[in-house]
Image (cartoon, rainbow, N blue to C red; front, side):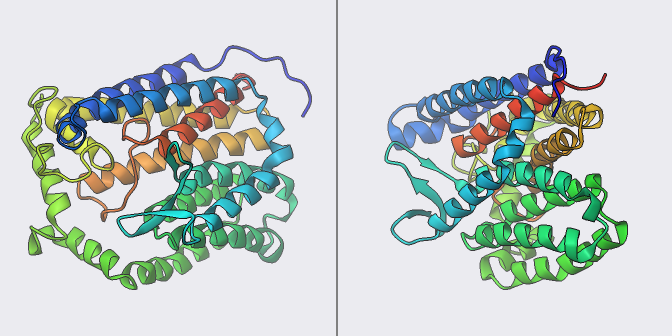
Length: 367
């Protein structure tokens, strides 16, 4: 790409991300303090780890901000191969770490990380590169559509084997939006949606625990102490918050009622403690993030930058939509963390790295 004079990065986007990150650190401590003390003898165990990951994530974001985004074109294939190997590695017994029956983690000795979380960013980088290189073939089913479907199918297939349907859906959804932005024929996209529905239905119905979760989503009160327990407790938390909330740190559902209170269901605790006002504020921040991200995509100086910005923005925004949909009972339960807010370094670090790429692209936008 030819040299383009840079300008200051998008400070509004950066401020939005740091605000969400700050809310996340506060809410991780508030939602985890009780269970942290019960399990580890200190209320600060999860807070310390989240603060450490936040610092590492911010450092990663700042470093990536300095790297010219078009350099990722040269390494896109290597990034894809690397994440593919990691996803295979995590499935090998004795190497992949099993938690609650799911083989999703690699143990590094000093900590664990989840390759599927990094796969989201890796597939966005590769897809932006590939769609840019094959622009002339995007109208072709065999030359443009099918090769990309195969790549995404392989990545999502490996993630499903962990098993992790939620992450697979998030990856597929992100790539689908990138295909739309790149200019795939609407007829091809419609056909993909039609084909995806029975595939998704089979993925849900073929696994008893997924089937039970889906049925619980339709009627959680049919099994209030079993599969419906998560969503019922989540709705209790949100309902108890009212307009202004019970007050920071005053949640009752975090007292061993609501499972995954500091990870996948942290938005419910936020709603209970900060109320409708607090949840609307967080939703507004995510809306603002999406607006700034897509604005960067629209004004990027080249196709690769545009697709990369659109993919990263969609990756983060879609994950937030899925998480909040699950917490509010609008979607079936799946293990998707809330970006910037949920506890977990495997999610936080690649997301902040993605934000760093987005900020770098913002330095070269047209307007």
